[in-house]
Image (cartoon, rainbow, N blue to C red):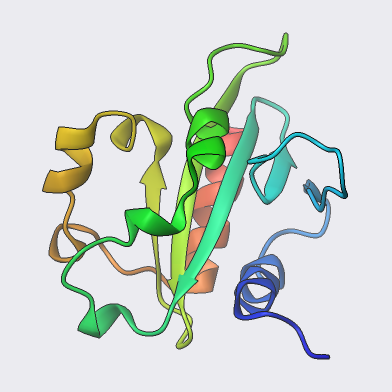
Amino acid sequence: MGLSPESRYIAKVHRQINPNIWKIRMQMGMGAPRGIPDILYRGTRIDLWIEYKVINDWTKKRTIPWNKISEHQMDWLTMGEALNRPKEHAVIIGDAFGKGVFIWATNIIDENTRKNLKPTNLKLLTPKMIATKIEGIINI
């Protein structure tokens, strides 16, 4: 069995990230808390939790697929300071062609804000641009 579209997209981003950046894929088994974001990136300044989602093609999307983010994932992405280390939460929604958007979790907390976020308002990023953004967030 091959990699899922989500795993392939994450691999595209990870090929562009500095190999010295600590990252761990959260593949939780049975009995683990539901909704844990896919990847934890640990930097010198901050931790960054990211939930990755993949759609077919951004150019055909008129809305952001919020329904792909479960209630449990939303809870994790919007949680407060549960750990004694600064952290941020975000969602990256990529497509099969490698384009993606980066959305801060603060923008998904409020339902009205979610409704107002449109694909046309978000800049499509390459995996390299996403990797550079991640590196800048956790190490600056």
